[in-house]
Amino acid sequence: MTETDNKPEVAFLIEEYKNIAATHDKLRDLLVRLFNYFLLLSAFPFTVAGIVFRNGGFNLFDIPGEIRILFGFVAIGNLCLAVALVDVRLSQYRYARTVNAIRRYFKDSVPGISDYLYLPTSSDLPSSTSLGFVWPQLAFMVLTGMFFVACGTYGIHSKCFMLAALAAYFGLYAGLHVWTARRFQKHKGGIK
Image (tube, rainbow, N blue to C red):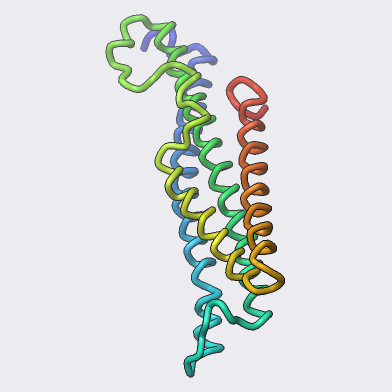
């Protein structure tokens, strides 16, 4: 055993590294579960419509008010899941940055170890402005939510009302997305 192995701060960092890496993996699994919940939620109104109109006659542009309300609730649910997806992805980035900082500590403490570190050691990586592979899922979720808003509001007053509802939905999503991202950028390294 070397002298650094007996230091309490080294033991702490090693244990912290293990915990953070495990949390990062759990967050990756949560991303998959959130998208699965989104798919289930999005299928629900069409299942209800299939039961209600099991003898035929379903017209997406002429649906009863109850199903319109259901479309509205599903759109709100999709919005919440989309914002949760952003939050989880940014949390995953925060943990990755922490792991990188721990790697940097060991790189600075043990100069010979840098040849064996293939992953980044900068706490500025990954960038909090890039959502990586989550971006297409997020775009699909928001567009599906807008589809539900359009189905729920089509024919209520006018097409202008539907367009206003779509703009409000997208504006609400954009605002929540920016608010979530700013929470993570407020402090260097994430939320404290």
